[in-house]
Amino acid sequence: MSNPVYLALDVPQIEPAKALINKVKAHIGGVKLGLEFFCAHGGHGVHEIAHLGLPIFLDLKFHDIPNTVASAMMAIHVYEPKIVTIHASGGRAMMEDAKAAAAEGCKVVAVTTLTSMDETDLAATGVGGSAEDQVMRLAELAHSAGLDGIVCSGREVGKVHKQWKDGYFVVPGLRPAGSGAGDQKRVVTPRKARDDGASVLVIGRPISRADDPEAAARAIEATL
Image (tube, rainbow, N blue to C red; front, side):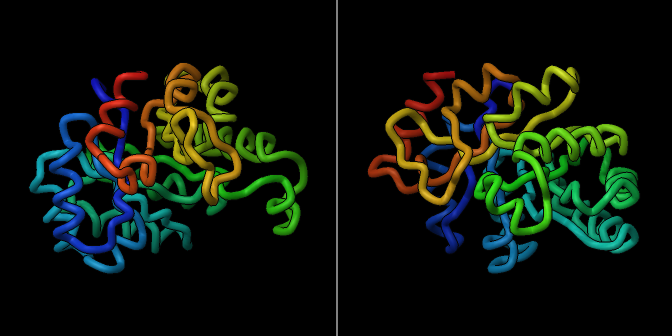
């Protein structure tokens, strides 16, 4: 991939979203569409963004019984996504079925521990140990299930990459030097994540909410 940056499209309206992408498209490698966008605009919205010519990452985080997830995966073939997310905590059978149902050429990656969570949050859900421990456990499970890779924070990607040499690693929660962390708790810079083995760098607010999104995207690209 020539440019690993995927813009997290956190703009709820279609026309402003398209305008933003057109401003920054020369400095990003793709667009990530998440739950807010998909629930607001559905398939029509996905096609509208896809028409702008950049790869689409559908960050829908499927998590259900294996048959339901497999059916959902088949239902999104029409959008031709390059990347789709599921939850590793759905278990091995769910992950295997999701991968088997994915379109050819679509990367299926498992969310391990959300970048908004830390050890205190995990403990409250009954998960012991550190966030890194949980990421490593779920990465091993995703690997054994035949997935392409995982989603994890930049703090864990280096360790996971050492264990899973050919894995495909999506890293959100990134903040350029000098940016505020916002609601993210385990953040690193895009350059650090890339150096540690990230395949895709998901960046939203540092670009979309910048006074000059094009300049912000260009500055991030320059660090890579």
